[in-house]
Length: 241
Image (cartoon, rainbow, N blue to C red; front, side, top):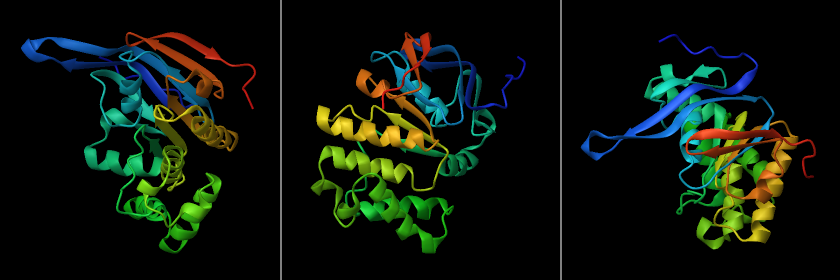
């Protein structure tokens, strides 16, 4: 099989990516069927689809949390199919910020400490700059007055905004989010939506997996998945402010 042909203009690129999982009895389930996708630097992409359509599998391939059964995945200049686990972890820490649906903040650390710890793990930000940077990020997401609090004392919307700040800790060029408003009410989801829109305006590359059509309206481009295949890929001519 020939090597995938990647485009130097894309910051995220999948070339004929297939992902299958082995089932009991020797059968296999294919979650993604030959996905080819290119995302330019600075693009804000929303991925829509019903449960089981392959959205989270797609995000996991882009994040290097899973590997394709066949095809290629290149993100931020790295061919992820060719990286070992240690190299992949170092690459992920420097290039990706990931926002999860259930926040995954460490409960025994303050909000500020959660953000600083992300910088400590990667080592990209000099030690003397880590706490000032954490303060700047909390200001960005509207949580400057919550820095010393534990996650359990914050609302769901505040915890999600804190998780976004943590994802930005190492100034990654790419932000991935998996159903970031899935557990939030309409008002707090709108607050999180506003933060993503601000990041897009700053030139971050955003890929948001969501069921939320309102959140998707803030994106430059919407991909819709069905049964592991792309069945719609549309650019929005008027992105909602």
